[in-house]
Image: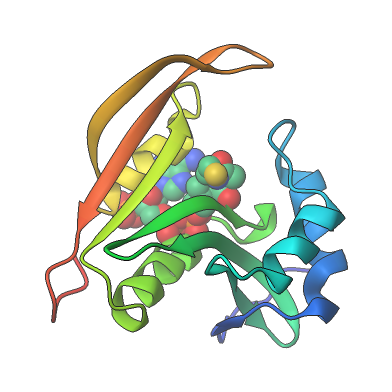
Length: 156
Ligand SMILES: CC(C)(COP(=O)(O)OP(=O)(O)OC[C@H]1O[C@@H](n2cnc3c(N)ncnc32)[C@H](O)[C@@H]1OP(=O)(O)O)[C@@H](O)C(=O)NCCC(=O)NCCS
């Protein structure tokens, strides 16, 4: 049953979150899924890879997987549980990174056929900067590279 009021808390994922994140991967992605091993490797990573979760009452409603590069944040994946979409949870995850991980830019790749995600990124002020032709498989699709430059002190 969907709750009326969502009290989001943002925090780094821990090993006890792995099963829930894997379940959300299986429910929300038909390809490019992260497996249990991949999620565990990220949590143990020395490569500055992290997972930020948005939770309410111990339930993970969304998460973002990213790498902190020297100058920018590389976003590998963002996901919001289907029943909780269009409630600004995805926007909240992006804004949390902007505010608390102090980098000048966010970068990501998205399938050109993922129209919903593209609208979401553009509403969050990402700009398309590059196209990789036929980059993805199953089905074949271009990759769009999006960038957002962060202006300190704003959330836009
Ligand atoms: C993309 C995703 C993370 C968006 O999360 P969300 O919490 O539902 O997004 P928000 O509520 O913050 O939406 C912000 C804006 O984007 C728009 N938007 C979000 N998803 C959209 C969609 N599928 N189609 C059209 N517009 C969309 C919202 O309407 C909102 O617009 P507004 O500012 O005018 O009100 C979520 O739909 C999702 O998990 N999708 C499946 C996984 C996926 O494809 N991830 C991206 C590739 S890794």
